Image (cartoon, rainbow, N blue to C red):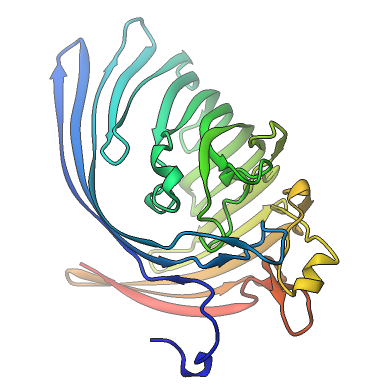
Length: 390
């Protein structure tokens, strides 16, 4: 129900929509002794969606003119389906070699599009404790139903396509220790991009958390890539100690209709995390987790237009040219496990964001101060709980 305090004020945007799926799936495994292990399966999704959206005059962050753009309202009851089938075989064609090959078929009932995606992976045991690996494959994903129905022109959007290429090496210097180095390249095509704002790709607006101002005409003409390298160390529980350390360097770029490559919304060059713990005995355990990430890209406001119109007016010529501050967080936790006849009681106390660091969540427009305002994530936080295991 509409808040009584808003009575008499003009309606700007309303979304009262639901989406749901019912899934039928079947998987089977066939063992061909000495030859291969074959897996196959089928999946059918019954998709239902009810869209009741009042768009009115779009004065979203990409619209530069204070008059806005009139958008069609959406009142649709959608009943459609999606189907998929796959087959995969694992074999050892040569000594010390494992080969996995597969094929997947997808059909999207709403658009009538079909896609066949081959995939393959190869692992070679250079030594008993040293493995080389490589894999490649095609993947497809239909744009979200809300975008397919967000504008009449979007009905013909194609499935987003991605080609993945991965290579790596894994070393096991001890039974409880693993070190690995892996590099990857992903290339995207048929990405939905704006037909009105040639600088805008959905890949460069992926963390907006809202559809308001984003139900716009789209075409499947965007391209992009992501590439990176990851170093990973894992120690399994041994002598009371366990842990994991990971560092990733990556870059992501996407181009809209203007062909200019811009940082994707999740272009985060440096990501580091460390997780570790000490199990004192059968009852007590201490653990900690530290995370660091480069700041995510963001688009600057256009001034003085934002102040004059008292709303976010993004400078779409400079999409994702700024960055949020870096992210850091340390959590610590203590667990206690009590054993009883036939069941266990596990209780814990946890302190999140021990340093009480102000990590930026998002930026919003403050209509009272007519300025941009920072919204931070949660600061220092204490919590505890318990669970019962049978």
